[in-house]
Amino acid sequence: MAKHLHGPMVFGALTCSLLGLVGWFHIQFTQEKPPALKSEDVFVFEGVTGPTEKTVVAPSGHSSLQPYAVGGPSRLAVLLTEERSNWLGLAHGLKSIGVPFVVTRDYQEALKHRVILVYPTLTGTSFPGEAIRALGAVPRNGGTLIATQVLGGGLEEVFGYSGTVVASRKQEIRWNRAHPLMEQMSDPAEWVTTLNGKQENPIGTYSYAQTRGAIGRYTDGSAAVTAKDYDRGHAYAIGIDLGALLLKGYNNRSDGFTRSFDNQFDPTLDVWLRMLKGMYQMGEPNAVTIGTVPFGKSLSVMFTHDVDFTESMANAVAYAEFERSKGLTGTYFVQVKYIRDYNDDIFFNEQGVRHLARLTELGMELASHTVAHSASFSRFPMGTGAEQYPSYRPFVKTRWKAYDATILGELRVSKFLIDRLGGGPAMVSFRPGELSNPFSLPQALVATGFRYSSAATANNSLTHLPYQMTYDRLSESEVGIFEFPVTIEDEELPPMGERIPQALMLAKQIARYGGCVVVLIHPNILDHKLEFEKQFYEAVKDWAWFGSMREFGDWWSARNALQVEAAAEAGRATVSINAPRRISGMTLEVSSGWTILPQAGVRQDGRTIILDMVEGTRQLHFAVDRS
Ligand SMILES: [Zn+2]
Image (cartoon, rainbow, N blue to C red; front, top):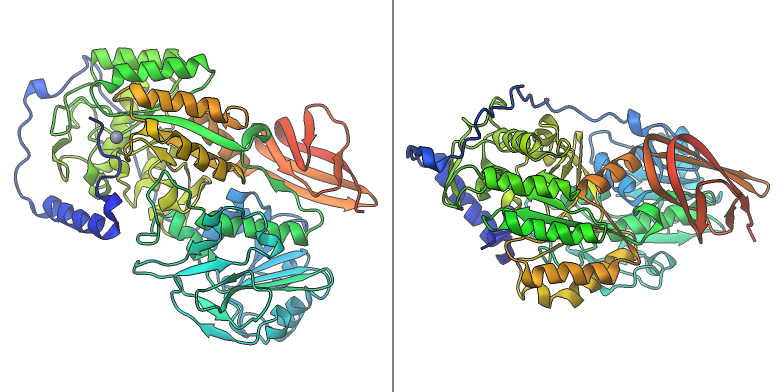
């Protein structure tokens, strides 16, 4: 049978952490000797030894503002009041939703922009009086002032509330569907979103007394997000640390406030990001945002398979043949199982390698699903970085007990063997068994040459968009790894083949704003699971883009490096693009009334501009009708 993807987590965070603790005690305090492996319990490929180069995990640093500090006035300006804050969460969120921005500590720089977001706090001592007065004048002068945790500065009048209360750990926000920014939130799951659960580090919340017009309110009726409209300008006060909330999701530290594990729609962070994007587009007439799905489609879909069971190796080929017949590229996370243990028999052997070679021949992406496939992977020691096949011999004794296993061993040895024997290009994608997710995974992936991770679920991440990871899953330092969380999987009941309507409903919910769907199917059987994939594909193919994790990861990371600036005057607008890495099917969303002037390789569909290919700098020209 397929191994548990999520084990006890379905029963709730408490059960999960208790079992986790039990497992930890077992590992830490069980002094038993590892059982001696017999030679028939290990499969050794003649003459294959490696990897030879040592892995070194870089120390943590502090991400600099500098890469985020450059850009023109058409962007949103994040005016940072405290550098020691969760600004990286906010930066990654804005990148994910595609709002171009700059981060600055200088209020005069921020004042060059029409839309300013003051983060993380705005108090009477954040700036000199003249700066606070200048910021307060922004909405009156036609600009947009957004500020999180506004606690003072005499700006009540500007934001339109009469008082602030420390409301500490509010649980949820009810959104005002009548507000123009919320019109796009057409799904009931977007009308109430969670802020805090039972976790130890709750997000501090403030509430505002605003009788009319608030965009979001806590359950007691006080305002969480205020709104005040001016002739042309706008002012919004947000009562929470938005960067902290984003990092709760991105760092998978939201235990206790997710409502489901996967297979369901949880748009918590996406509601906030779409609202911010809306504030930007409403406030900046030259707003140009970066699309989230290649070639102007509505949804990005990745079919992924965890090959972690004896029969799965042969079955994987059947999935790959179907995918190949439709021009799809699946991602196959293969457990490098050369040791017989509690989990299963050996299947990474001569026969297994022949199946891998066939997957490569069919154009599929090979990826790593560890060596040991242990639920306690998240508690393995980092290791020495010198672990090598065949002397690296992790042994899984029970679900929570493993010997001689390390994080680096799992990563570098699995990568070495699949790269060496699989016949494909060097692998870049990783998914741990049981989604067991060590805090140190991001930096360990960097050190071992991976680029893309699928170690979390969308619902535990609170988002249906990909995101960038941070060192130790904390707030100080970003790493060059992107996470593509699992959206739909096959282990929940009823059986996958009976859940096609629900899966399609979910795909449509996510497609409304260009999210992504990662489908996980264990190829332990064909039957209703393969049927699910076929029917899901047929139902979404007209409006979805499909790719492997490598393909979408390459696209997403190239998009992440893309910069856009816009300027307009006298009925004309120019968008300047800088794409450090080549990217196909890039899309931009422009203001209504913009019409692209004919140019090879570029087309317009409503407000969406689709570029066949962009690399380096490029300019697009538009006729602008402001009527
Ligand atoms: Zn697995």
